[in-house]
Length: 244
Image (tube, one colour):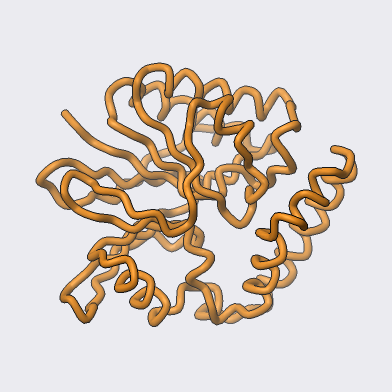
């Protein structure tokens, strides 16, 4: 049976080893069976460079490598936490890095894939931050710093993000509906899959070309989330338990 999987917002970190175990279980379960797996950003809580060869990171890379060796395709998209994922990581896992706003053909259905943070245009402070950290010169400057210094910077950025988000209105942290419509119409699609907002749901949308849907993946906590696409069937948003 042909099928394709989508996940996002695992926020892997050493303090939550159960999420890595959940990922390893998912990869082992579907290796060689699914056509492809798309990881739509924020795979890691922080990623400070492909040279960070901690045992935790290497375990995740090895799990992905075993998956891709099985013959299933593997794709990654940057999130707002792991924007420094590079070609070294992709090569080590056997995967391919995709740009935000990539359109793929899912068994005859053109579908727009995004992490989703670029859709949150009402959050002006975050959009300015996003523009800064996606700048190649800023990234080169960051990656030139020693690993330990990058760890400290990442921790400070994480704390600042948590403080900023605590004071933001709910609608600012969600996608801007007009931006969703604009992106979908610009790409000529009726289906959009993204993560980032941690608000798993399926939204019906009206475009100038007709009805459309926005599929939102959830973040991994007590449960994991995935979207399954199969030939001739509607997409399916599914929740599954994460065992501690």
